[in-house]
Image (cartoon, rainbow, N blue to C red; front, side):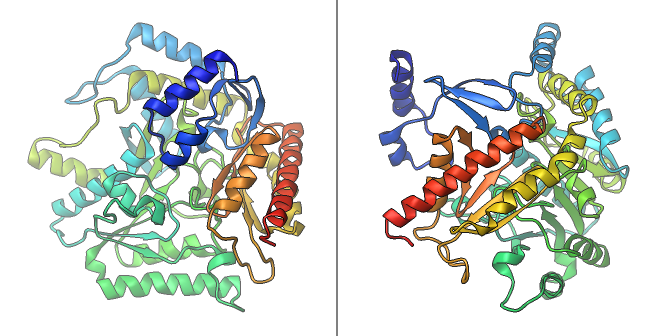
Length: 460
């Protein structure tokens, strides 16, 4: 480790608290310091090159160090570095971004509200839904339905919607009225001998039974990721989403599609709701919206939702909600250029074209001794590790094996994410066929190293 990187290493340990990190472990091992990025690759402080197999954090669609985004940020910073959008203020990038989002998303979504992150966006969704139902004279219609293993963020409200123990233990969450339904992951949650169709039918019955037990007049909205991301990259069983939509319509429940990871081509179509054939009342997007070069998230809503909110602002005289940097002009300028690149370079089409190569290449690992399931769609996938393939028994302690796999992947020059017992993979949308081959080769070596380590540790 060179002198400068050693100094940064020690300074990080001394001063920074990291999210999703065991602080005591970090005090001993310190950070991997990333110093630059180029295309699908990043480099650490020692000059080692990595294929960034998680696109930063499910988000860098156009790759790293895209000069057009750097130029867009610099130009906007020089012209108008900031202005708030409260009380009738507006700026051109925010206006044009709203227009572009309405054009790109399903046609029934007509209005845009900006936040800085997906967590803030889903928190805002909760408040907007409550706001609506108060306007409609339905103060009891405030409960949300979500799913176990879902991820919707980490604010008090969005963290309550999230269905992961690690995001709730110690934080007194859930703190809002939410019921978590069965995770729609057939491999892990189906009963023995249950077909996929039977599994779907059982989950839909559970949803309807829960609504009837709670009272339809108390259930405000159902929120879900089309493909569940941070819970382990889980694709839904066939028929699940159309069935959920039908139930929501039957009982006058809003349907919210959390597309923070799914959006802008990740699933092979522009949005996950289009991949799985359902029509949300509210759609939430972030991450690939700016390729995470700048913080920005957007909530898109139907006209029916907007009209109720607008009526209540007229009655109250204001919409008492917003963020200082929400819809920041630099973020919107970068986002607009990012979306232009996605369209001009047909990156959503690239995800669709490479889907078969990427998914079939990864599914070859299904025969690996410690792989239980390989799943995914488009350019997002999860590889779940198991101690026993026949019984699907997981390794213990939970999460350790995938963490070792991620470490061995980094040794090979590949960054992936360990999620409980699953390895999450989500490369930039600019990835090429040759780079898909490189990713799969490096992951294969990491799995072999993990298998050897597990044997040496007496885990097999």
